Length: 406
Image (cartoon, rainbow, N blue to C red; front, side, top):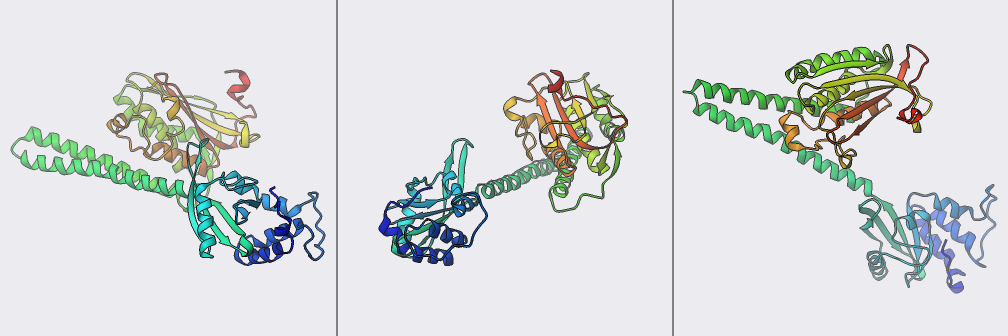
């Protein structure tokens, strides 16, 4: 903690300053108590006994706040700052680091009124600026109080929303524009039966693609929104995989891809069968789309007790393995984003909407599970949907891969 090096400043005047702070700032009460405890020689009533171990309990309490606070004198010397303020990188224990913040403090002193602003703080670790909301309130005797709130997440959500709207507009515009052109060509080719049939087939293909996109958008909206998950029911994993195979079999046969099902049978999960079938179908469908002809797509089930926050929970793992083109390591963290495509041209050629994996992720989260991926370029991919197990055919668990050295 930074301490005032000016005894004359702290003695006598601090009590009045902190009284004003209590009236004008959301956390003024804590700051006032803090400065009264730290005041040197200032008259103050006996504090109520607090059963804490820390010798300066109000400092410890202020350090736990997620909102940053800082007291600054008229020479921009820091009289007090809590941990949240220091972590944002605008101030340290002794001085104001941000030049923008110095300018805002000067403006507040001159006007005698509070100032609100947003400051971007470069976060080299995160690789992008962090947005901080700042409110500066001038107080008597040249003291100013600054409040800081990290609003990086708000900016990120707003950016995602803008990108989502832009992507929807683009994805819908493409098939609509294509159908418009094809309809005009079909009208001009009324005298040519072969050309008319070809254009009609293309219109049918584009309308089917748009229908898939709208369907996926509605499904994703239901999964992400406030709509409550349907009453969970026991669902047999074997039945989920069988239904997913039924819905993707035609696409697999067109590419002579063999669908295999291996692993532990008889496991059950608790949830919505419709959503779970959609998730597994999306994984199998992606595997088929990105696999060469005359290969195989294998779905295997196992039951594990994973590490991390799910340690001790028996999880049914539904792994979908393909022999496809694989995914570069730098792309793995982004493939579950909406409309994100590793190869946009190839994805559109296969009829993908760019929403399938986002739907899988939200289905997993809604069921208390997660989805993982491992892949290497030209070596295929493995997507694993992990869901809490309801009942098992036996007590035997499959060890985690790390535990058996694979």
